[in-house]
Image (cartoon, rainbow, N blue to C red; front, side, top):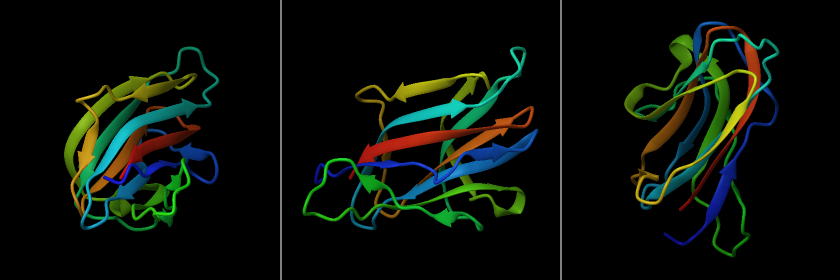
Length: 153
């Protein structure tokens, strides 16, 4: 790894339909490098105190899916070495979802709140060269939110 730190964020708030599994973001590791995901921050805009928690999945995916907008991660510490990690943002659901692979993390988060989730050392997620990682959300009630996915290549 070249210690190229990055973050990926959506360009706008992401709307989540009720009871619909939705991909909100994906990153693709360069063919010849490992990418390490160091944290995932999620924030929701729910207004009901009794809202049912949003189910969060962080998983390896085997395809890119269709319909996501290209949104490459940005370097957080500018370097002469260009970032090679690519990505895309949703929301997409149904037949457009990337093909799910290994589920690496799951969480339940109340739709009126958010979470700053740094993965502890030794538990950070490694994406092998050419691999993909996506974040899927399933909200029981319609809501919206945003995220920050951070890592290094």
